Image 1: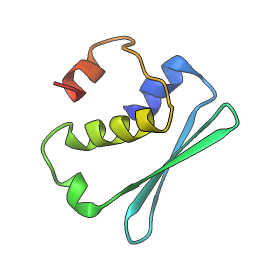
Image 2 (image 1 turned 90 degrees about the horizontal axis):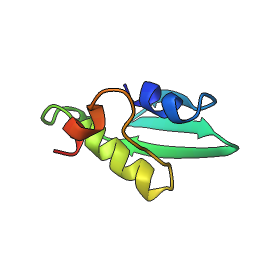
Image 3 (image 1 turned 60 degrees about the vertical axis):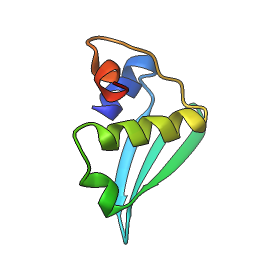
Image 4 (image 1 turned 180 degrees about the horizontal axis):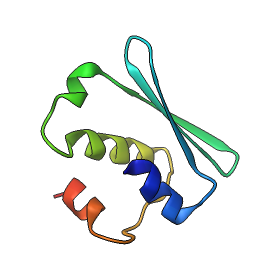
Length: 78
């Protein structure tokens, strides 16, 4: 869902998830790569908790987001 939301803003955005000790989510677009580290404990939280964490970190790093089709981000930031 995160990749779909980002691609609605910019079709060139690519999301890559890798797993070593923790997970690393990389967002690549507009000659900028943003990495977020996600621990296993963050994945096991309540519904949308992981999405909220990821979107909060992306926003801190300057990745823009806006409500697109549907109300996905509305649920994430309830």
